[in-house]
Length: 420
Ligand SMILES: C[S@@+](CC[C@H](N)C(=O)[O-])C[C@H]1O[C@@H](n2cnc3c(N)ncnc32)[C@H](O)[C@@H]1O
Image 1 (tube, rainbow, N blue to C red):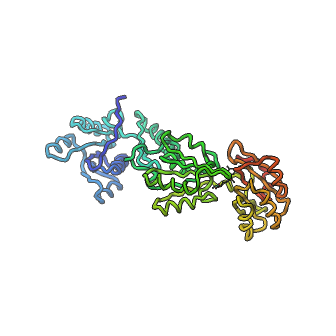
Image 2: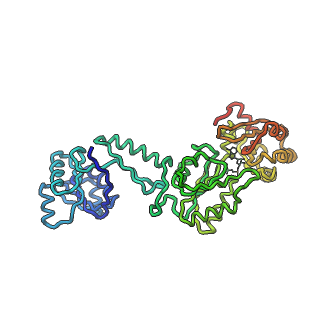
Image 3: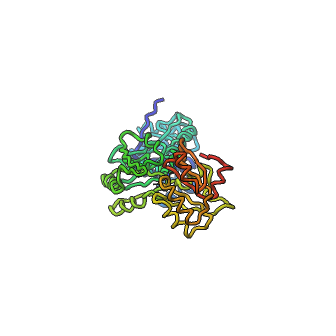
């Protein structure tokens, strides 16, 4: 194998395509993407090439290729030819063109015979989005379908964000444009419950400002020189105040870094994502929001509890309980009486919340499920009633993070059990 892989800058350079059929057309498309100046030599060309000729995108000599072509071009002082593609359906003509190109020191790609070519085109994937600027070229050693299969697999991995896409040079274009912040919802905690877009941006990030909840395992996969700032909050313990988090986002974006704010669940569900976005906007920093799977619905699901279920209820209310039942009571005022109530941040205030809900008319025997650490190996579900919930939570040492589901839908768990 004497191949020497190389990427050519063909922009504005003359490339001769010998042949006007489907293979030639495909190759011309690629050459035009590379902004080459394409000249087609063929007695006949297909519709697509004809349209390109009409648009002035390529030129066409309606004749068969002649062995003296390169020499006469040279003698006539014609513009230099950088590359030739021999793509006729006549193998002898392709061979003659390749030999002639060789004699004149011009690289030639033969579409019909890889081994007899001085140059070969690989199967190519070009990254987009977070992978923008990356080119993957796969040579198949004479087996183009094999190369295409590998190229497709790499392209899928590029799209999924499983590959390390972070730029390492300041002068390379950043997939997360410098001066921007991506607020990424990481989902409820399991690494594969983040969105593809979120994972792509994380793979391209230079600075990651991370919460305590969310897919923390993904942080271990980042390169050593990615700056990880852990601002993880716990109940009654906020090591980095919200104002400082906002400032960090702006400071790093202003320094031209690709910043990802990795949050648990969805950034805009009880996550202060809106405040962070507004602070960035007020300071001239563009923000992209990547929604995430909120714990409000996904953690009940992990415990086999659908928050709505036909025949039981068609609505649910999500509320923060860190101040007790105050928010929930407001939200329930206009909700149907059978609405499921999903409480976040409600463990420490559960006694007060249960009393207030019962005082406001909720039945004491309403089923309650407390689901701790959903979608993690430590997931645990405790089922009881509204009246008994505070005592049971204490006895069972229920701890944050937990979702508290109040409503008849908790009974569905009896038919399903844990689903995570
Ligand atoms: C500040 S809120 C953030 C909510 C997040 N933005 C979301 O959409 O899921 C944190 C609360 O979400 C809940 N939570 C988040 N992830 C959880 C998980 N994996 N298991 C149980 N509760 C979770 C807990 O109630 C926790 O106290």
